[in-house]
Amino acid sequence: MSTSNLPPLRNLPSWTRVRDLDRVRYPRLLSPPVDIKGPKAAAQPRIDAHSTRVASLEKDILFLQQQHKDTLERLHVEIEDLKRVNK
View (tube, rainbow, N blue to C red):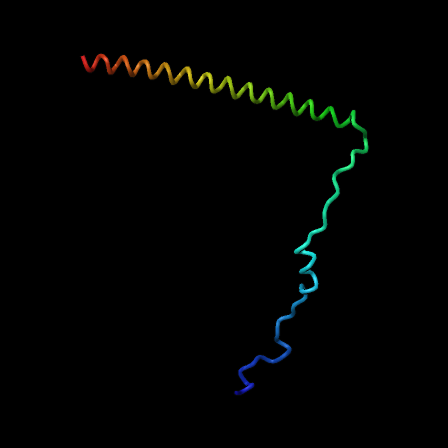
């Protein structure tokens, strides 16, 4: 077997990440966020987020009701047209 087919040692790849593999495999756990301002400051954003969510859901419901109404009107028109055609 000839060693001339092997690359020179200076061209071999370096494996610098081998020592970091355990850190990648086992990430450190993050602690839960600590509320520095106290419970009263944390309660206000929840209420705002809740009222925003409720307003968004009410808007979605109104949109769906309008779509339902329009669809029913079109279906009734189509039924009447089909009745006329089939007479």
